Image 1 (cartoon, one colour):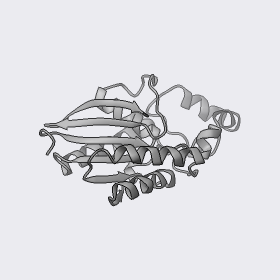
Image 2 (tube, rainbow, N blue to C red; image 1 turned 135 degrees about the vertical axis):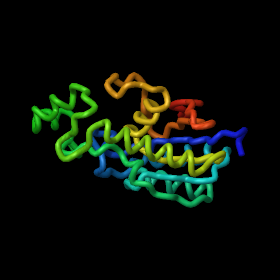
Image 3 (cartoon, helix red, strand yellow; image 1 turned 60 degrees about the vertical axis):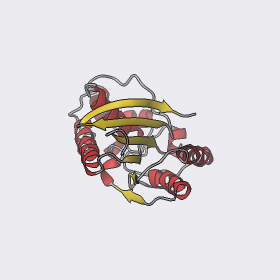
Image 4 (tube, rainbow, N blue to C red; image 1 turned 90 degrees about the horizontal axis):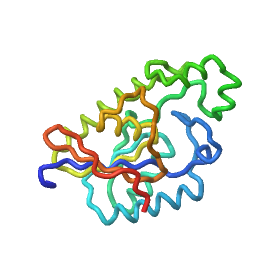
Length: 202
């Protein structure tokens, strides 16, 4: 028990090859770069100074690769949860924003309006991503009352989590950073979520 709180530490996967190239990844995959692997090891070394009862991860390869490094250091099992996957970016996956604009100009123009109810063709709308993320987080918080969890996920899911906790509208443009292997901590007491720290990469 941690002062009656449930603590959830959420981390983004390490840098990937497509991160470097600026490509939409979504539910497609790209392996960690050498720098991404180094980031994951440094993250694991820091997390070792803390205490966790459970480790959950997105089942996408880049998250699993990061989680496996953490799990080896913490000596803890990984539970995969597909709800922690990145937003499905449909036709844009594997493309840079410029390539997506040239190849699918109408869809890209709709996407750039920021309408949270517009699904990228063959993908998800932002609200769908938010709803599955929120449901997953609420379920884990209820299931693991007064425990300390670590979750390995994606930048887009971190965006959804902080919007949930701080009640930031999905329509509002993002004005915060989403760093690879950043540490982002939340607490839940009596069903009330609180942001404890954000974007730590020390």
